[in-house]
Length: 92
Figure 1 (tube, rainbow, N blue to C red):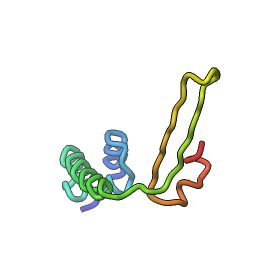
Figure 2: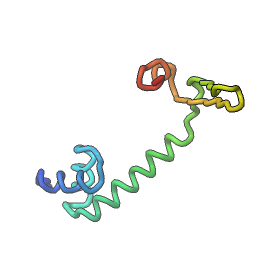
Figure 3: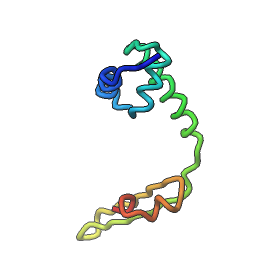
């Protein structure tokens, strides 16, 4: 089944999913927008369940002590790989 680009655009605007994911969802639902939304929701839940069991053992620990020394914070931020932990986006 051929999927119209306008349908893909509509589904992307509605869900925020990627273009190829939207196209696949529309193919699975035979062009039905609501069926495609359900498909994306179910596939998203499946992806989240897979990622939910992953261990985040890399990361950084930050500390902050406010002037006067009466208030302090320890913050631990974790990720899956050391490559991510070393990026500027993660450390900022």
